[in-house]
Image (cartoon, rainbow, N blue to C red; front, side):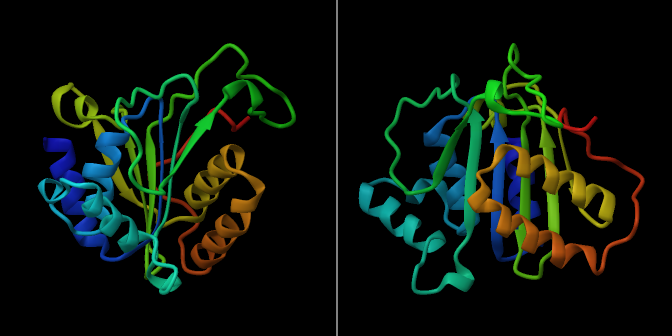
Length: 205
């Protein structure tokens, strides 16, 4: 599982997370809960065997008694592509996206397409942010068996920071925009103007 192992190594570098938002075309809730959520909390996947184990996991990233240490976690996917065979065992947000309802500059231009980006936005307690861009869906096949590619970059410039925030604004509910604005405000004060790479999305004109 080279992609997954690389992801674990990057998580160690980040330290404690406060936000982790992912997008995918299709999703497998078993993979998300057993491998991704456990990685956020420093638990070995093989430790998750019973419903009680998942209840403990859920409490680690969704601790109402310690809001400053809880992790804001969301997974977005194309509403037609939930390939999960297992029931969800945690309260993690799994959000279906209908591309027909997404608009860019007031125009609905995705009426014949699918929601296909596979990225992850990770922000740690120091307000350092990273973007993961990959060809792999959120599934065991995507992260272990298929031939896939991925790149993991620290967001150190204002242009990319703004582009990534704008992307998530387009797909998220208005209730999440305050959180995105806070992230952006924390970024903009100490970032460079530009970088030698550029984040692009279909929402940009």
